[in-house]
Length: 231
Image 1: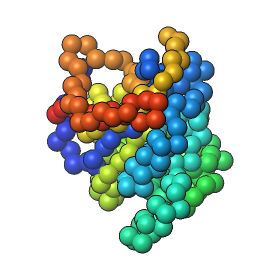
Image 2: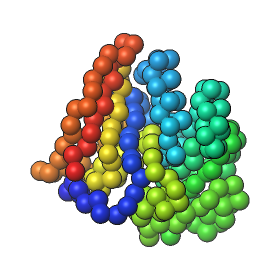
Image 3: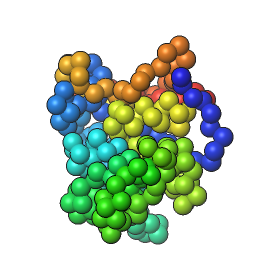
Image 4: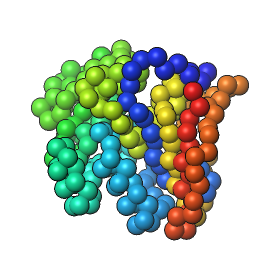
């Protein structure tokens, strides 16, 4: 069931993703695939630079090992001039504290790191990660995304960029916790019934997440679509 409740204060949340013409965001082996080009990379970097935090799920962390840093020197300098750290806070939704301690988010770029875990996360893993990041327990068996967003809002994070993956996207969308979605649709077909799509999870039955088209434009050899989520 699609949950449209949104009474808890939370950041403005937007999802950004690149997908193939058939809606896949990775191969069936869940390997990262280059779908867009340099112009789209610059667009994504601009979105990151303009956000207070960037969030991914543990699946994306384990398969892609993203650094989630701002790449442009000019954009980093602009953030610093405005009194911000050169990178937005980097957040991993990781119910069982599986994030590797040698992940690139810990090795590359300055800034705050946050690992959201559940109360079921192994204590030794929580202790280990607590040495290099802020570990936030929210939820019993799985991270409670609504509570996490409320905590982030109270911590001063007002604009949150979500960079996947499909399971995290589902959790946020099904909970009515997303405001906008950016999708770059590239000119390739990946295929595979087991390849992840933009949103996986349980799926909606009857009551669907409705979108309003904000803009649609050609970008390189693909199409950039911006959607507003109906409330």
